[in-house]
Length: 308
Image 1 (cartoon, rainbow, N blue to C red):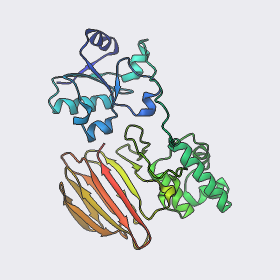
Image 2: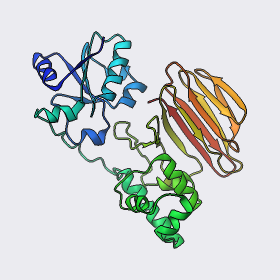
Image 3: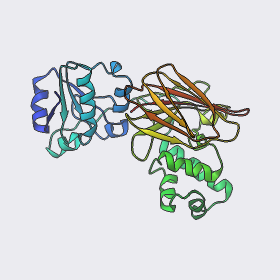
Image 4: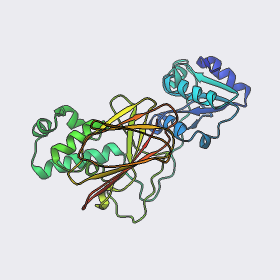
């Protein structure tokens, strides 16, 4: 049974010792401060690889407000963790109770470290707009995205949603990946899961990150996406000649191609011209990994779907 406890009770629990404190927020939230003694395991990462989290027998899960930590606690309980707690009202409640917040140490900068995604997208949108001679009003009219929102994106003050990025890419008539291109010329690039910059769908049940360097201007794209339990994601058709291939690594997934409907299990694959809309729906079970490839004579795109 998952036990929900208030901040003061959690403080007493931690004082007893022997508790694995797991913060399931995202890295940018963690950077604002965390409960002392906690370690970071984002909820998406925990769901995708629960064994890799190496949970203890007594675990206190923490998020910002208490929702995600409860989900993590339920997952841990279902996997047989002996004693599971969830911090009510999360880190915000801990702060509100006047308890100490620990500031994480900044990790050493990696050589060739990539800039933040909000800065990358903002720079690319601004450069594309300048190349075409568009004002913000013109781009707003072409994309359907508000002028103020576009201004915030260009200033790097917000990471646009997946839907917003698609609208902007269509307005510029460029591939979606062109908005994610990062500067750099290194032959080898490392994409750390812990520091991944994900673009999240409007309802928070779908997210994606690029696992390639769009600035390489190569003929492929490779994405990793997360799909929540019972979630659905509708994908628009790609350019004529594009072909999309999908592989399910675990769990079950339903795909809809026009009027066609298929249910795929672990190891099953699908391949279809991407002239039609795709709909992905996660069925009961654990969908750890779905990988898709889209390609034509001049371009290949690869994507990976994983549940959050």
